[in-house]
Length: 443
Image (cartoon, rainbow, N blue to C red; front, side):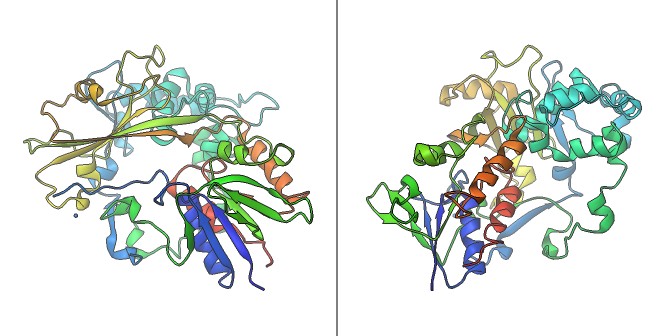
């Protein structure tokens, strides 16, 4: 008997889940529902006028040995210009890292265990302040969080966002530095398997596709676009799953995979069936500003991937244009350009914890902070509202409690909840969690 598997959400997690389910259960009917007219979620690629699924020929990579991979920068409020982050042992001895990082790291390696008794999680800022001091936590910890979560490091859970740091502190008897020098048990056992990775990805730091990340899409599925879920529950007669759509359609699937944002899932569940912690975490809204500049000599930025900006010493305010970081696209992914030597491309991320709503009138302020002289020949601005979840301390325990409730009772393992709000926010995290969906199912 064929089974009907329903996937809610056509973003990266939903698409990857539908793809892997179609391989795991080839005899089942798989339907994917997406409220937008397009698939891909927050992934959006545009080729400016100047122009599948065999994607291997479309993959473009930046090797770890290139300047675009090795050179990453900070733009800090206390100094002028960009500061190169260490990319080798010798670079730790160059100013200002010689005074900013080296003494702190050496001191941390001799520092005693100072994790408060009984705590099972804390914020990234609290963790780094405790081990490396408040200056290090603000300068480097907040910048790292800006680049990944577009969030305030004082809110983000260290165990959910950077579990390796917590593990290294345990492994190093209280010291992250000592723990980093001791291989984890998984690595010692040889569990880290890269044997199935294509040869093309070895030694790669950055990757994309020739037409951008939106090259990733789905095929061989029943896809319902321009419609969304109005309710998800069970029938009173025989406890069958029932999903009602805004277009009036009613589906009774065997199983449901929700890749919806957790607050959206909370809205469509009836109160008696609602799950715990779906609205526990805040989200960040990010504005992405794509800029293309005319040919200049020398290039408008140094060779490298880009730079991040730490949290200002006085905290977030409206006194700055709200830049979180900038990617030097013409260096990091130059293979996407038909004439890479002629133009300079940058992608600027704004917003997040900064209390502003950027508009095209803010471009002058952005250019001033970027220290860029020529006006751009092309500008594209996209506002992504509530696009990145911020898992706060205790997130892992909350998600375990939710999964326990899903495994029994009225749901009895028939609803899986995945996505960036559950696991990590990276492309790899979303695809990996989607790949595991259905592993224990018997249809």
